[in-house]
Image 1 (cartoon, rainbow, N blue to C red):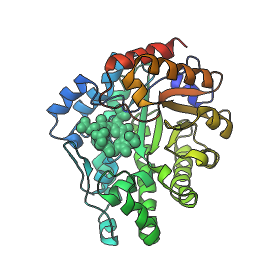
Image 2: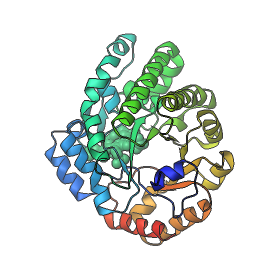
Image 3: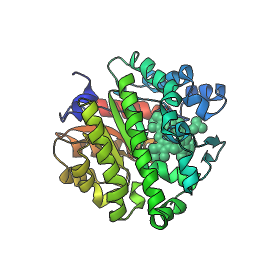
Image 4: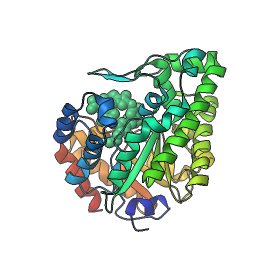
Length: 340
Ligand code: CP3
């Protein structure tokens, strides 16, 4: 196994560290915007292999990155289960809010595999072209996906979803169970199609109090990791419980992910002290320092590299690239990390 990212996820302190960026394919690249303009809408972009393969590979043509991440979205899972989904221009995702048992019963696990067929074709075709880079598959973690499904749109605090978890724990629990099973299937299918590592994005994990963090973030992630490890023991899982703060150690111990994503606000030094020494950390440059460039980019990057030298580490951002990022700043970041 010689791929640098896979070595780091196996617990090796590869140096300079492997590097990829969340949302490395996206609107900050003019070539992405050109392909996006050819697709009828964002869901069509994700489910048309010719287009999705192209945008997945675009950042690797420009930059010397260690990974390609499948171009898709965490909300393709509810779409594949039968919940309507559209991305409104300038507004983000819109779904019919799931608030009762009838809406839950309308979701169908049997639709998942046929609906994901074009995404799996994208995985297979990208895998054939990535060379020395590693192909990462992904899913949203059940809590974060449930937030969008219940709320029906993006929100800062997801009040309807978090309220439902308290007021109708039966409905919320059934949705979480369904999503956990669907996530295991989706990630297993991506691995079977050629994904070499998978990442679980729990972008809104940090909204929960500890009791619910254990029930709705840690427990489903532990089940997903255990199921994947039984079926695909060699394929590492990266967990990203964003804004987990003081719950990070419990998440690491209970899930046993091979890689742990640290968000922009997390201290890498503190995280390092909380998790097993062979667990790779991944993160956590401020996406706005990348957009700013110059001294901000150089100094923040140097501090991260110094803090992580000698332990298994994957250089990344603390959240996704913002659309205003000049591509030249990404090239500069790659140069800085490669020179470590
Ligand atoms: O390059 C990559 O990282 C791979 C593809 C990818 C996308 N979304 C493409 C995308 C991945 C891994 C995601 C994950 C995702 N999607 C998350 C988890 C990570 C995070 O950012 O917290 C979440 C919460 C979503 C849901 C989502 N998708 C929202 C809220 C939005 C609208 C906001 C926005 O940035 O426009 C999206 C749309 C989306 N997903 C875009 C891209 C490139 C932009 C859509 C466009 O081109 O118009």
